[in-house]
Amino acid sequence: MNRWWAVLWACLVLVLCPTSAHADELRPAYIEMTEDSPSQWLLLWKASANSRLGHSGEVTIPDNCKIEGERQREFSGSNILTRFSLRCDGSVQGKTIGLKGLELSTTDALVRIAPIDSAMQTVRLTPDQPTATLAKPSIISNVAATYTILGIEHILLGFDHLFFVLALVLLLKGGWLVAKTVTAFTIAHSLTLVGTTLGLLSLPSQPVEAVIALSIVFLAVEVVKSRPDDLRLSERFPWIVAFLFGLLHGFGFAGALAEIGLPQDDVPLALLTFNLGVEIGQLAIVALALAALYGIRKLRGQWLQPTKTAMAYGIGIIATYWFVERMVA
Image (tube, rainbow, N blue to C red; front, side, top):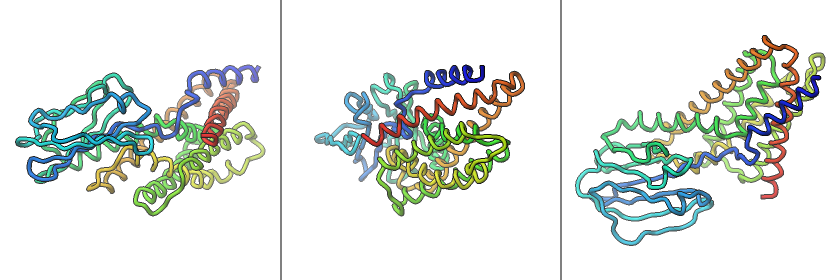
């Protein structure tokens, strides 16, 4: 009977989880409007070449601004970059900026406004709110809030980071042990995230993404092979395993953050709050997973191990698919 429950749960995991999800698909459009001289602005907007926005999206500029000269459009990696100059009569504060076509997409857009004589402003556009009014900002609150939210979304929507944390919860017993292990994972990926963003470390993205998928397969196998009377290496020293794999996951986070873009004048603040958001998201995942397992244990104790096994099989199968996909890409 336990075997059949495991099969049913595995099928549920496979149905509910997207097999083609990528770890770092947090790639919102990015608009940067920088004042070059009084009344003269340079506008850059970036969108994924694989998205509808990259081909048909258009920036809605403030109504006191006019485009001057030709638009320059080019490919940069997987993105399309569009640049043009603006002439604006007076301040852009109190004016509206937006992105046409965003309401038809499933992504967000970051907008960075950098005037010469006042603080930079960072705002976030969403499909529900594709425009925003530019006000005199508090630079700290804007950058901190925006990148904290991005960090939370990244761990929740970056499915292989999510699966890695879930696999740790399935493998380990005890909330305190899980918390210490996830903290080791956080410290490790923070180190490589900061090092890569500052240009101190570098690894090619394709093999890193492949090994990230392999790390999830490893944990899934450990969950399936776990026995109460025979602790495996990952159960005896989970924080070491989490730390070593966390170093690799940090390169994945850095790749996503590079796609998003960083405010050049506030890189430390953006890094700190992005990491804070990731940690908040991880703790939320751990709390929800532990609560769900606790509920199963209390209601139907005999279902607990089949549930863990089935989830491990589902996670392992999807991660194996990602590994093969990234190796042949």
